[in-house]
Length: 470
Image (tube, rainbow, N blue to C red; front, side, top):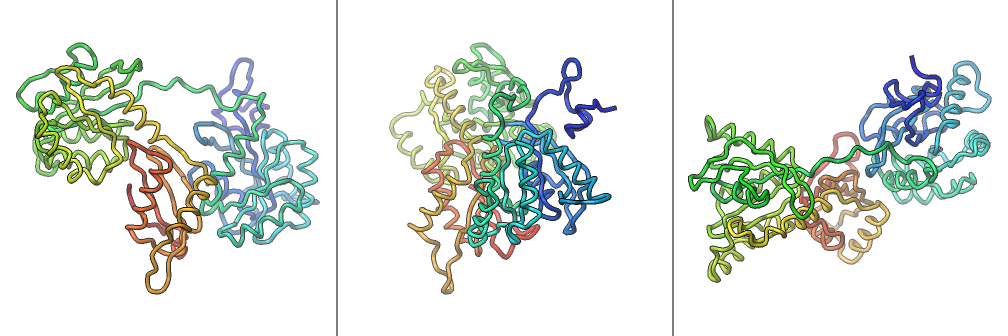
């Protein structure tokens, strides 16, 4: 049976408890408002999955329901509530009491108003109830799907709760800015998150075609023989995990088999080696793709790069055997890189020699840079301010007498960074690439792929999406 305090807080049965049944403190965010203003849709947006029941009729949510949520690494509990109505009776009164109990146990309250309708008498009565609670309240103007409605949302200043946060819980517009404000509103004298588990070593997959020196590099980094090295290609078949200290930090390196053939053409041992290499890349956070700098960039090299890029991992290109490269080869290698690797100009590059140890100390800084880029987030406000200036300076080309406009953008995720552009029409693929290039020039993202999805207005319903990868 739940502890009484745990039940009052609306926390899940398996919420962690400490000594003497004390709740392990995570901040609690209560989402309240009149019926059918989009509270459960907002909860789904915050937790990143469709779990709270949403239906276009009032009264679907009756009880307080708590969910675990996370924003930029901060953990908190978000509590969905039923619609609050003044002078409610019978079942509606019980629902209102549940909402008031959620407010009493919350650190921050999100008061949701339907911006399409504007402030009602019931909203004004709810504001009086919220003021009595003396809890930090953020005013959420929901159903703001475009800039015109954003202007209308400013009328909600009249409620006296301060700045309205215009959002579209359904489409995600403005949700990042709102969540930034939620974190800022948490009390400074209260724990802001559960005690973080100490993160283990960062995971690095070491890939390359046979005999480019993967095992030699791993042994050089480990300063001992961890992997069998042989001039015969293909000595490594199973991925080999090694904890290696590089640049004063422990990393988990996985030495993988060199890929000779496409997985569909390989058989036996090579087929399973290919699957294991693919799995090692998927399980990694950043991948070191090793090349033999003394040899021409091959089809196998290209295939590995495609595999790594499609997995969405950070990338460091390491050109090994640099001690064998003369001036002529360097000249031709630069041309090869420009020609063969133009799909991933954002990848970081280091020139090393596993045999002599040349420049292997540059590997750790490159890995850290790639990981920072891979985890990077840009606030919605900063992103849209930059994008507005970019589009004004270089608008989309006119097609058929019209040019699609970008209404706003958001970054819904990282690892790798993912961006969504909400537009009035489909964008040319070349213009999306232009935005990606400028995005990288402004914000970096060295060593990490980024994903840009375009959502034209006519496709803003469920399932409408277009995607371009960077």
